[in-house]
Figure 1 (cartoon, helix red, strand yellow):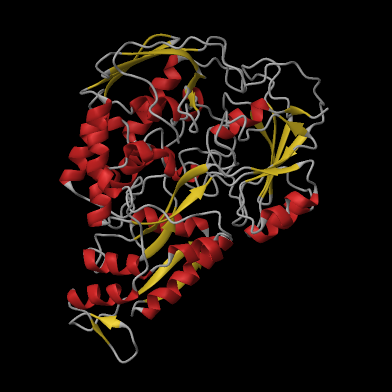
Figure 2 (cartoon, rainbow, N blue to C red):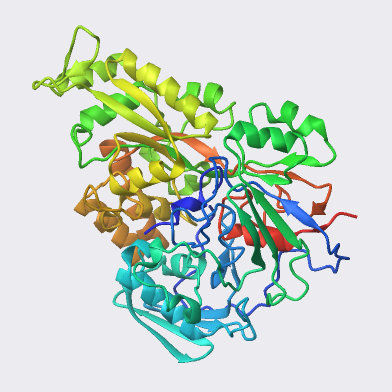
Length: 562
């Protein structure tokens, strides 16, 4: 189970959400943010946000397709509920309320009345049932791998959806309510074949925006006049230009050509804030873990000493200082983020990664590898430890990180070629396991379970050559699955914490992937045209332009500056 991986890079949790020990119903009037004051709207108001720093756009608005235009999920298609990843709170969205059984085996959603699709057709329970049916039929669309847990989905009436499970599954609400985009049955029923392959060039959604115009270099979204929140959005137009790299996007930001970004910017105080201290701002709350992935179904990455040797060769403090300008401190070996400290096993509290090149070589030698005259280790059959390390073109900070690691790995006898490629090629290789090594973010949720589940559950994997939903390293371990199931089937926080501690032990001792750095939500914004942004004092949403569906909640909270 995972979050769409496209909801993460240059962006991304909170606390335990809600108890399953009793039926809990939320009946609240949804709003576009924390500010409910009426504002005078400039009908020509537009906001420019960063979508992609990796080249031209395909015309793709399908939230279940890996090539969807970054920045658009949540703005066109919506979810039943909205979760604030920063504090774990949940708000009604397309569902005005919901009820969960005390044993976590059923959820009933009561849909918001009066919602229509952008073409004027009514939004009903049939759309929800249809969407979940598509996810069950086409596993590549089931980005959160929820359908194996679902027993039945029914629509007692036009505004009610009932979901039952074969067994208790605590995390379903996050995935089904907060991470599943509802599609219009009357449109998508005519789509032929696997919906994950459909580009959806002319989307019909319930969200606040429509596609006004498209070129590979610029997407323009305009206000949906049929949007269900009266008076929203006050930002009547969104412009989403594409850029070839972080550098070109940063230059546009400095020139005032972008209002909202999710960029890594070196020395941000000097290069951005000081240019206009009154209006230029940033906030980098903790988000996720950057990890080094390797397909464990391929030799020699299936050998633990090789993975340990690679990890021991890396100076994570150098990655932070030279690659990330001090914004990304070394990750913890468990993969837990600082705000997850309540889940930390006592024996791991003081554990840290340390660079030890001598240990790396000892591990390789102990595994039967011999260093050649060229300084590179090889196995007894002469196969050298020589690999490609994939990184996305335009991710300038990650490219620097990869170059630093390549130098460090060469010093211990492992040859690494930094392979800079387009995002589509990078992501397809990850999905299909056709890569050697790659940097990747992780996708946390309200507790550490969600990161571990996406990263380690065997059902999120696939054989090499077939697309995995999130377990790109192909970790397959029955004990891991048992611990994940222990957490998911319990409503007892103590039992859940015991499961998390067991998963920490697997991360530390078996190293299915290699934690590198704690990554923040990259987030810069300008207040000259619009105010109401999330910040440290108002953390109502995960910021940045690549966190979905949070991007919608941010936009709906904005209003013109006085």
